[in-house]
Length: 353
Image 1: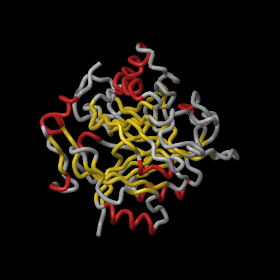
Image 2: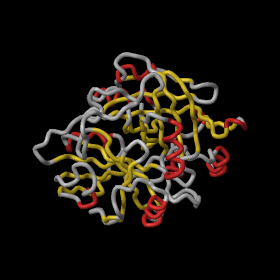
Image 3: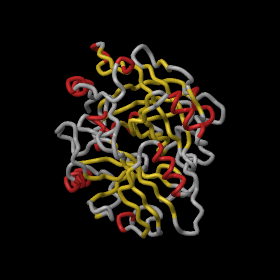
Image 4: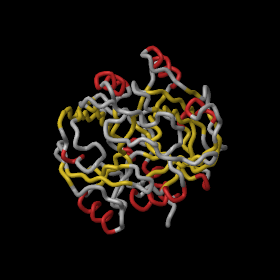
């Protein structure tokens, strides 16, 4: 039986103060549409929370302008904290999140005039485009990159997330893993000291950077909204031994906690991953009901360096819960995008400040 991995669905972030962080993401990233925003226990994650069932608030948020989603997770049974180690580029795990914009200079000016915690000027990358870097309210690093595949012309200066930069220890093993997940187009593969990283921790060292995307995206309900997405793999080519970003830490601690993928036929996918040596580390086993409006099947696996990858098979999610408008995926073709009227109706659920 076949399976489908549509692509990146969301980037997960752990934060200590859910309300404050989400407000920041609304202001600077336009992430003001919640698909859900609930307090619940996380029994699935005990393998990553030292055997204890934690409670957390989690919100899956979108920008109607376009881009993938973000899941903002804030533990309520413990205080999310940063790593005690001094982390840098090339450390194992997700180190930089990507946000897209139609105009890099205008986005830079917006951040600059609104005290957006810029950590670089507008700089040119070896990929040939201009970019800049910021830190969010919790010190997580984001790269603002140019794009032209926006779903709407909403006035916000940026769109949503479009991927991330992941530190790896063995590029060939990691390439094979992420290519299996559908990111099979190598856009760039260079080894150098990169000038656009000069203001980032460890940015004056030499790295191999490989930028991946999808040759033939397979569609999916939110594909028109998500647009093109990217995974950048980063290997430190010096003699330094990279650290695991979440070594001796809990899922939900401050940082990029996981990268989520939209999939269909979880059972078949699990069998293939297990055969390849990347079997599920935790699995809801069946449909997980999150109230009457949301039904999903969630699993986790790890990349070759232990970075958490969440697989989500959606069965039912709310579009406008107040109006009883839901997406029932079981009754749709896997690759079929949602109709425009339904996607654009999401704007009526925006949280305004």
